[in-house]
Structure formats: structure tokens, C-alpha cells
Image (cartoon, rainbow, N blue to C red; front, side):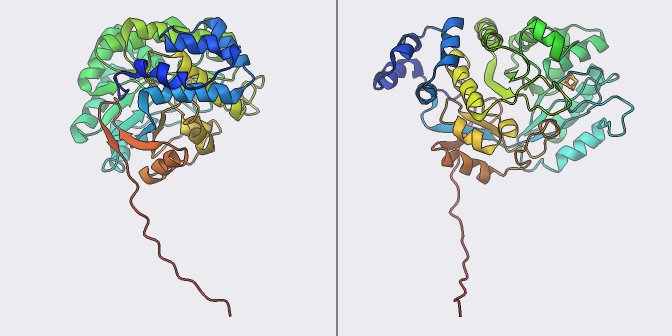
Length: 393
Ligand code: SF4
């Protein structure tokens, strides 16, 4: 149950029944209470619902039925192994051509030395990067084998679905064989990036050449079948409609019914600038929170909904914990993709600062491992304050 209360569905009638709901939401509340998954039409209604506080309250109560006031985080480092990419997705501020002045590709040794700087304080490394034209499965197996042998306490969460597809193609092996080899070398889970919007017409415009929406789901399904958990994501606020977003949620939910290995859903907004996708709109704070709340209500078979602090910033992440999210990702000791894309979130966060953010939101901080199988309540040590007051003369 990945930290969920074992009888969370049985708690819904009690917690939702204490509240008085508007006529507009009552049918949806009844369906949620009865364990009936929401439909596209109900999703549209939630997007159009004017009483935003009521929507947030509903998502918060559903979250609390699973996790009470707990909110989760972990201690991790992000290392992006290369920014060289054979594709050029329109929204991507990170990728570089091979000959660009600031193109880079970390050797296995350089990656290990980078990770070593953080290895005494993290238990997860999160690594995604570009589609390097030469790095096949042998390269990644060597990398993951080195990480596992030098830092056995660190979980490797790495590679988006399109990276897996690229590595398999370059190595002329199937997706299943590729994932099995990577797993045997130490890959523990997939972070879920690259889902964007699971609609092929939208993908053709914003990320031409990437895996199709069905391939994204199939790659994750293959990982689930070999016992590798994954997360799943959604990049919203580019050129998609509300219906595209809901279709995305429904497809993720259906895949989960089939293979059951999604542990967390991470919806995050596109951060526009002048050069990329000028037609995209900056999602407002309320829109971001609405998307998180609707994700909680729609994805009744995925336990965790993440407020991706590195993308939406501290303040919204704090609010999101009152709107259906239960996780704020990790301390993220290093990050470049979101910051090149315009994120203003603090780069480094120690565990105390992250726990404080959670407490300020009204929740209880709980440290977790990557796969949501180990949990530890995190109490902030009393602050030793040293004061010296100078009397005004
Ligand atoms: S999003 Fe990924 S696949 Fe697309 S251009 Fe950027 S690095 Fe390459």
C-alpha cells in the first residue's frame, strides 16, 4: 500500500460524509465514496467548478483518508549524466547538440566522483539526461554497476522511457531485455519523466520523435512486470486542452490497472520563456493547485501525488499539501533541468528546511525511501538560539 492506511477506502464515507457538499459536486463525492473512478465528464466539471476551496477540501480529505496528516520526502541528489541529445523537444531548455560549447557527457568516473560528494547524506540518485548518440546498454550497465558497488546504500532511480527506448534501439535489443540488463546492474526504478501529454497529436508538435504515448505506457508496463516500480508524470500548460489532460490521467489509471507499478504521479507545469513554445501560457498558481487536486481525485489507484517543489517552488508546494498532494520530492542536492527551464526554486534544501516546509503546511514530515517501503517520522531538533541584545543608548 506504499504507506497508505490499509483501510483508506473504508474511511472515505466517514471523512467525506462529515462535510456538506454543493449539488454540483455531490455526485462526484458519492462516486469517490463508493470507489467508482471518475469519468471524463466529471473531470471537466471539476476543471470548471467555481468553488475552488470546495475542490481543494475534497482532494485534501481524500489524501488524508490514505495518509492522515503525513507528507513525505526523501534525501536525494540529481545528477544529469549528459545534456547531449539527438532529439530537440520544443519545450526543452536542457538539451544541447554534440558540438555546442556547453555540451557535456559525464564519464563513468566523473559521475561517480560527482555522486561521491553527496554519498554520505543521500539514499537516492535521480538521473535523467539526453539521448546520447553513443551510449548503449553496456555504458549504462557499467555506470549502474559502479554506483551499486561503491554506494550500495543508494537507490538508482534513472532514465525516462524515451531514454530506455533509445538505449534499447542503439543496443539492438528489446525493451524487456534492456530493462532486465539495467535492473541486474542496479537500476532500481524509473522516475517517470517524459510522459508530457499522452496524446500523439500533441506529442507530434511539442516533442516530435519521442516515444509514442502507447510506447511510454508499454515501457513502464514492462518495467512493472519485471518488478521495477516507476513514477509517472504529466507536463501541462503547453498547447493541450483540458480534455487532453483528463485523457492522460485516464490512460495512466488504465495502465495502473494492468500492471500496478506506478507509485507516484507527478504533475508539473511548463515554465515558458520567450524562445520555446511562445504559444504556451504560464499556468497560474490556482491552475497548478487545481491540477494537483484533480490528479488526487482521478488517480484512485496510484497512492502518491507529488508537488514537485523544484518546478512549482516552495510556496505552491506548501499549499499543494493542503490540496491533495502528499509528497514534496527530495532534498535535491543538485538539479539543472528545471533551472535551465526557468525554475526559481532553491537548488539545495536540507532535510530540516524541507521538514519545516511540510510543518508550515500543517502536515507531519515523514522521511521515506525511494520505493515508499520505509518510513520514518522526522522531528526537527529544537533550535539552539543564541541571542545577544544590545541596549540602545
Ligand atoms: S526532453 Fe529529453 S528527449 Fe527531449 S530534447 Fe530534452 S533531453 Fe532530449
